[in-house]
Length: 412
Image (spheres, rainbow, N blue to C red):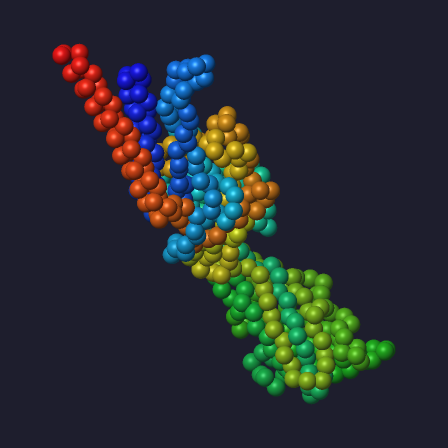
């Protein structure tokens, strides 16, 4: 019987020791990003039968339960630090091709543009099109590190109002003589090499057009960098009715073309369709597409995980979308080194989607999820376990005293 009681006490000491390991691990990882607190589950062992009824034979550790509740989200200074608000895990692929899952979103950009996890694995996600729509094909996320190629201007538009009270001007427009035009508007344009040019439109109120019903005609001409050399289809006219609405000339039939010395010829479709002619000061503005060459200057991540890269030329390009994995049973996940989980048969297969889709949480950029360890409760638990250990040790001491007494009886 003494041997049985010693075995029971041994199981108690071993179980408490395992529980203390869990508490120690929690306290050690209280500052570990994305760490999930763990606790030990106990079960009763059966011993001998007394009077036909089983007597408890001690205790055993039946498993580990992890707390997958949300940890506190704290802001960081890195735009690639990400936190999940809600359910799910980031998806990683290591150098061996193994897939892992973690709440730790401490990411960085590698030398070749790969988005890397805190342990050097590649972060998985989706490629996107120019409209930011996901391809639905899971792969590594690459953030381009090279320059953004220039785009030549192909469209230009002038919007706003021309003063109906502007004096009528006769004769051709001379860009060098302000008395020959009523107002002018300039827009920035780019050639195929990304060189910047100034496209300026000069508008002249030439008076009634002679049409029936009566309309007011405005002539226009355009220069590139202050010159008309090499330009074609760079002049025309537009007319407005008595209500100030544009009647004709809003969309010139042929694009303005420009022959350049070092770049490909430019062809710019013009649009004056939003102009009006009301009584009041002329106030018109111009816009044009195209851009110069750009260098990467920053990364932004939206709450649905869409990664956008901004460039020095003012352009922003969507480059990828972070994937989020969810599971039917988080408790079935297998913890590996660095706090990365692997799926198991118990967890079920991962459901991988974009952030905010289905049960997946959303993304908070420039933020990290702290450990969900409650240090105070862990210290209290440590005191409780210490008392339990002392109780089991006291039982062991008592059993040792009993055995010592028996041994003395046997020798007398």
